[in-house]
Length: 310
Image 1 (cartoon, rainbow, N blue to C red):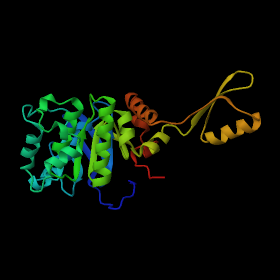
Image 2: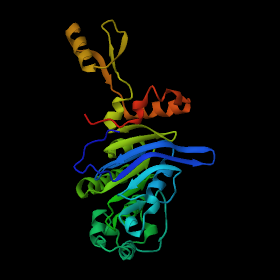
Image 3: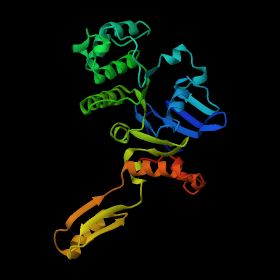
Image 4: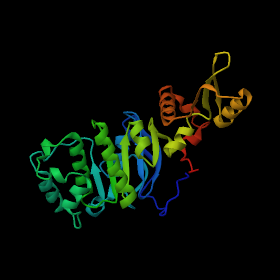
């Protein structure tokens, strides 16, 4: 497996041939992953693809059927309290401690860690200083999500798991949350693993994305790399001199546009270049799985490999 280069080449998460079966049902069928320090990594896939099972195995909450897994240098099946203290969890939905005030709750959680973040500084970091004295159940959805992150990182974790992190957010809250995650990863070196089925969020936030479909990694790379895999060709649309709508697929849209301009000698009417998108790749892989395209795996084995950075 080829991976994107990093200053520290030792993966924070290393997974090889991970399998998971519930009775006769194979949920994970040979997952390989390398996730590096300080990157935001999105595990993208439809409901039922195996995202939650994968993450629960990585967190040490579920025993796998087979394969090798290392998280922060430890097999999660054997991770103790010291190992767990290095990991932060932000679950999709939990509403405990509703009667606590925000600052009181953070101060309480800080007592569980040997070297916690300063609660007041943490409130500032997540933008909740003005809500310090407010009860948790009176926070807005975006404020509550930022508090969830504060609770997840108060112990200074090296690795942060985010499960469907912005479900129910309005656009402004989502933008603020993304900025916070980027600060944690890129300024503080926290490794962040996000599970989501939101294409826009994965493309906006993640350094790299793995597409988990049907219990297998069907593609892994940066959003741009995966988008280029959607189709080898872009589509150029324009209106010919006689008014006829035209379209042509090409691997080199810039050259085609140049040739159209050179031959036409002037502006090109209704010119539009449609390049492959991340969504195209994702939908293609989901449809392949729905159509039972496993027999094509050998012919398209590069779908299981990570794409080297350009």
